[in-house]
Image 1: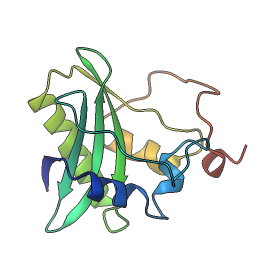
Image 2: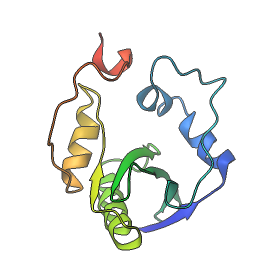
Image 3: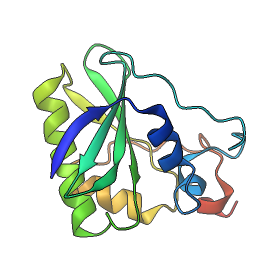
Image 4: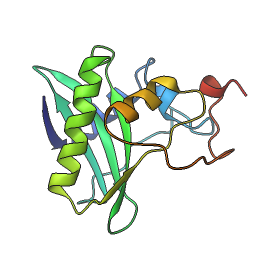
Length: 142
């Protein structure tokens, strides 16, 4: 499993807009038609590509402050299960080894069990609950 920064915004956009990915990564107020991914900016916005013989997707890592970074998962269908766990562990290791990150966080919408399991398997742990902070009807059904 190889983790490396990528900056191909067309590849990033194409990956995010796949019908089996998009519903799980956007807020209900975000239109796919108008969506454009942010440009990578040093350590502030990074797209860390996952390669395991082939491109498997990426993790978006955004710096929140000098030591806290937020991570989001955008992986292809064939990079699920153990491959996703291996990728998540590898990207967590990469972030701590290659940035100033001392705390890595993610926000998981209520009901997204796959994302919760992936985060825990990657070594993250729940430290809080931020109720009513994310609108995504497909996951919550609310």
